[in-house]
Length: 597
Image (cartoon, rainbow, N blue to C red; front, side):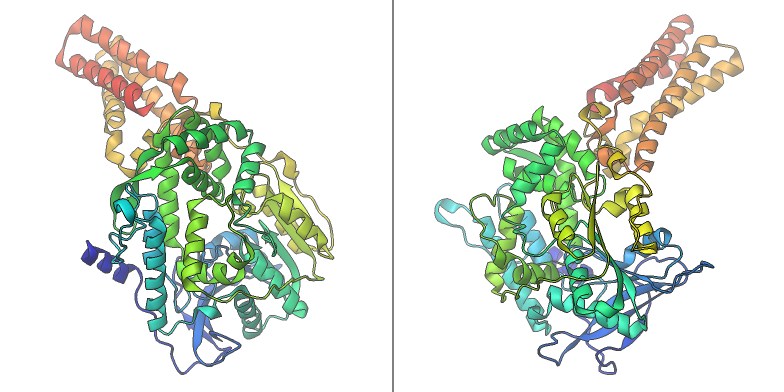
């Protein structure tokens, strides 16, 4: 097992690249783009000191520039940084170029991020945090090469596994020359300012989401002459006790979804009798059994609400969990596991441990396993707390937020935005975190603001954004998610579709009406279901992870009609073809009712 993990770590997280001596701080180096980007895009690295308060070692910050080809190209670009900390930005270059077709778009990575050098991945820590959910809890020690001694009674303290993994990652990074004290919000903001100077832009428009809103506000405060406007999506103001308020903010978001009572009942039920579900470890590619308490599930829901379309999933999921559908916890647990592996946890925890964790109390209300894990890592790393920045700016600021966002709720982001001299706040009904990714209306507001920051334009009504799905809009089922992971599970549906098509053609060619009608209704059913499923997927409805569109239920009667007609055709002629069709139809209905629905 350890050999397998070591190989996986080596392939996924290569050693830190050596620093090339030819580049001096402030230089930019061209490099191939690390991900797919649109035409007219160039990528590179900005060379900066790892610690500006202690110059010496230099590091490289990744960036991409997409040049607009519009005839009315504006002179000041939009510079975007994703949140996290530790989320990549360059992959959104194409999306942002379509959002701002008349402006150059600059996407800048965070120092220590996936497309910067060094990249501060900590897969040991990710495995350990995921291990907190394992049955029995191991803290991820097994499979990471980190050994955790059992406590009294043979029990393993999962947080001890997180601490051991965090120490192992810190030591590995230290051996590679990394100084974690250089990975703070203030240093990341200084990188953005230096990139503007290196690229030669007199001014530009700042765009941050989630964590990077703090970065961009620091940039605006430190570089007033280089900032034309500031967009803060899901604004995370300084001074908010994010960890201490996590449960309160989740409960508030669920109350606005009308789910508070069902949520609280679900938490009590699962705390008393935890659910056991299958979860995939994305690093090892193996499944394990996760033991999920009510508080663990609450943490999963909080993470789900941070994803585009998450409010729709959670609205359905909480109702289903209240009815005992614990099998539906696999999708959000898998999503959490994938998110842990995708995030550069060395960077994430370096920022959190210096800029946020020291300003929380971590009292008894901090029940999420994710919160406890962050605290355990920071206790192990013992990094110094950063001084509060208390940044402000005279530049025009548009802050946008989602009504169902538990990470940056309006109760904290609205007053913070409106305290800025030229700040305004717009809340979008039906939206969660990272509003611009999910809501076209939010993109219209942002685009109009950047075009003319001085005017208060409202190109669309934010209160009329499509509301999340209600439980009645979705028929709860784990089958679509399982089919997406293992397409062969849909074989009965494909066989029924082929049999129906064969019946339609055979009946039409031989003049057998019952056979033809049996095939026609079967083809109609498969077409209707396919349209519903692909239509939902094409519209970005993440609810397919927890169910199927409600119309799948009524459409089932079309399939029943097809099976009845096939049986009638067999009763009339009793040929082998009719017998096979009737058997396939009957078998399909058993599969459909007993498993899929």
